[in-house]
Each structure stands twice: as C-alpha cells, then as structure tokens.
Image (cartoon, rainbow, N blue to C red; front, side, top):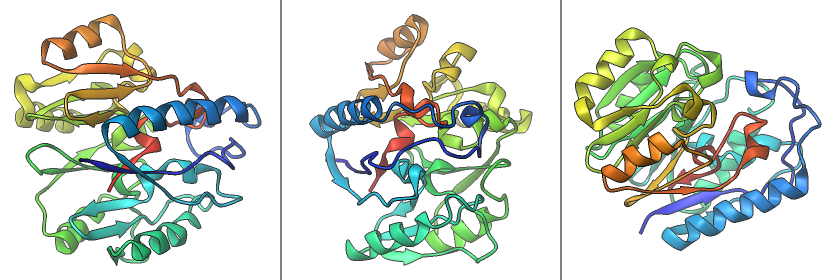
Length: 264
C-alpha cells in the first residue's frame, strides 16, 4: 500500500507572492473552505493508501504543500533547500520529521536550490525526471545522482506559471504519463516524447490551468482538481478512473492535489 505525507492547513493563507498564481490572492483564502477541501482530499487518499501527518507550523503557510518537503528514495530523503526565503524555514521541520521516522536525512550543497518532489518525479520504470529552470537549480541533477545513485533525466521548465515539474507532468502506471507541452522547452518536449511515445497524453491549456497534471496516481485511480471531458475520456480509455475533488482554495497559492501530498 502506498503511503503519503500530508499537513493540515491550520495556518494556510496567501500572504506573500512567490509565483504568478498568488498575484491578487493575498488575504483571499477562505480558511474554513480550505480545511473542508483538504479534508475531502485526505479522505479520498486515505481510502486508497495510508496517510501520515506532519505538524503544521505557525508562520509557514505553504508547509501544507508537502510535495516540496524533499525527495524520497528507499530509506533516504533529500530534504529541500527552498529558493524563496518565505519557505526556507520549512526544511528544518521536515528534516526533523523524517529523522524521527528513521529516514537517512541527506542535504545537497548549501548553495544548491532543490525543491524536492515538486521538481523530481519517479515514473513507473523508476526513472527520475528532474525539472529545473524556475525553482530548482539545474546543477542539482549531478548531486541527486551522486546522493541517490538513480537514473535521472533533465527537463527544463520555461513558464513561471508551471514553476514546479509536478504542476505540468504526472507519471502514471505502466509507463504512461500526462503533461502540458507549453510548460517545457522544445528539447524537454522531445525528451518526453522519446521516453513515453504514445503513452504520454499532452493536455489542453484548459486542463493545464485547472492543474490536471498536478494529480495523485494510486493504482488505476487518478485524483485531481478538475479534468475536461476529453481528458477524462482519454484516461478512461487507458484504464484509469478519474476522481475529481475541488481544491480551489489551494489553487490561489499555486498548488493542487499532488502539491498537497508526498509519497513516502
């Protein structure tokens, strides 16, 4: 059974701007609705997998986005080193959590920016896809390889709206994936096409804007905020069940279902 880490939105709000989705949304989060939406997502995930919680910390509103806590491989965790000062204090709390659970806590070089499973995703063949260009530094790739001894493929993100890889790319079982083409450089689109071929679904702009690629994949179930009829049909034809759950309050901060979870 898969296991996921989540963090209750006790202190979640939009009180600064570090990505384009936050623009104009400062002070506009409905806290009660956010909690309800988070609870709904938690309950859906908990029916399909095991869920563990990390304690939220006052003053760290984005800690709810646990995907950015680090990158886990077997019993190792590479704890994130955040680009923006507003999120940097999260790292020590996540490191303490992982250490208490018996993980070997690793860090990249002090000056290397790396934002965890937001920018590093394993596919079903255990290839690691690493996205840089907006948040994580490209040179982190070599350090990840050295630390975890895994096969890593580099992708370049070119649009600040798709600031993390998991906002524009989601590996699925059996070598399949969904992705948003305009988030990537031409070379990265070619790399994904070469690796996945007919098994990758390039989503439309509407689906991208609804964070359809920011999905949680558990077996044949795909949990996401919203998907068009066309995308749902394409996924159904490939044997997947799409589960939609409204996380619109979190979209105000630039995150959706996948951002709110970390597979551990």
